[in-house]
Amino acid sequence: MDDDIIESLIAAVGEVLDTELAGLASDRAARNRTTLNRVLTSLGELGYLTAGSEDGSGLGLYADARLAATLAESWGSLAWAALPTLLGNRLGEAEGYAPTALAFPEPNTWSQAQLEGGTVTGELRFVLNADSATRVLAVSPSGAAVMASIAKRRESGDSVEGFSETIHDSVFLAPDGAAVTGELVSAVRILRASIACGLAAGAISLGVRYAQERVQFGHPIGVYGEIRSIVARAAGLHRSAQALVDQVARAWDAGSRSDADAAQALLVAVENSTIAIERMQHVHGGYGQMAEFEIGRYMRDVRIVGAFDASLPSLEDIVADDFGLPRFSS
View 1: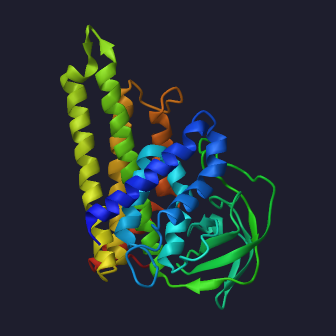
View 2 (view 1 turned 90 degrees about the horizontal axis):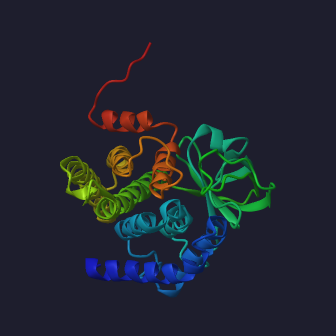
View 3 (view 1 turned 60 degrees about the vertical axis):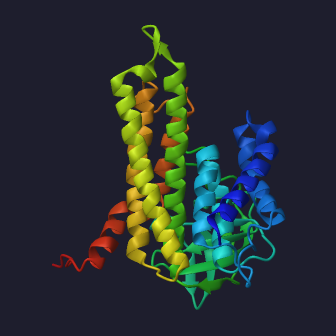
């Protein structure tokens, strides 16, 4: 599909959500609770999920990745609300748009759940969007993925300190899941890489605006060489990561689906975006967590993007294996 059509659809989604969420800007908790349904509704009404393909499976992973980046740029971790929907779209779940929670392939998120013969039973902890979901997309450490109904939900669960915008909860799954191919894990990584790039873009916009408005010694700080250098280098980090993610997503849609490429895209996106956002904190005059500035939220959010794999070094192993490097064995 033509890029202009993709971008116009994404812009339309953004416009709808901006309008819907404008009245909730001061209440972040309310934004968390309602954003998932807003995303689902607007995607459905605008025909985004079913556009561009005869089988109703949407525009493709590249379009989904662009949307994820756009959401992250404007709303930070609220982009997570759209991620399960986009993944459901990858699985041909274009009908119904039921709110979906998401669990990542990390040992402590798999908890006591058991995957056997394409069904999952038991308990999952630390599930994104669990408060408003009716089903969960669970991915085991081995890469097997299952879509299952939520049988019951524990009361508001433990949250991870500093990540208040991400919902962490426990759900108990009914044994009616359907197994999904391992390709899903790579699709997850590409979408997460896109979110990281979107966060970097949003942070750079904040940094540039601050450099234009903040006056020191009689001039906006943006006139000073160090600030200009920081912004230029951060922009380069962002654009190089975004270019790689776009390339990998387009290759995916063309049928070239490489686990190593997806892992590399996530590695580069998280690393480049983290550095870029950290440098935008420097523009704001900070070198750590900055709760008093919006830039601090982007720093927290980019940490979340890289947290939901067993470890980033595991992604490095995938890429190194693709080059044929031997693994150490005792």
